[in-house]
Image 1 (spheres, protein in one colour):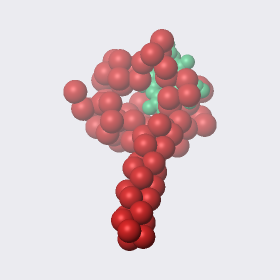
Image 2 (cartoon, rainbow, N blue to C red):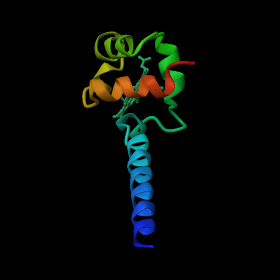
Image 3 (cartoon, helix red, strand yellow):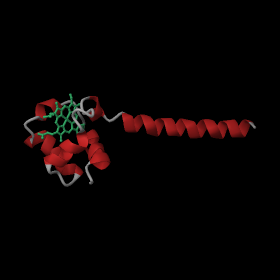
Length: 84
Ligand code: HEC
């Protein structure tokens, strides 16, 4: 019985961590449904995570808005929303 409770706690714990990571993408603070990220990524024309980083850092007229986001988060955003 103790073992079962422990297993359950582990599953819930892991699930929680995954959930938090998905929600934690810094982009989503500003990119809500009124400013949807998938749309923006599509319009940027980036075909890879690296291209999206390049675009947001150097080409976008909105690059000043994205100074605080990490390359890591830009890549994650592309993985989640960019491959359609
Ligand atoms: C501080 C708020 C903020 C954060 C954080 C943010 N963005 Fe943005 N982003 C904006 C705003 C505002 C725009 C302009 C929206 C518009 O023009 O309708 C924008 C535009 C964009 C565009 C289109 C740029 C262009 O020139 O066409 C892309 C792509 C984009 N964001 C990706 C991201 C990604 C990926 C992240 C996370 C790594 C992110 N943004 C985080 C505020 C933010």
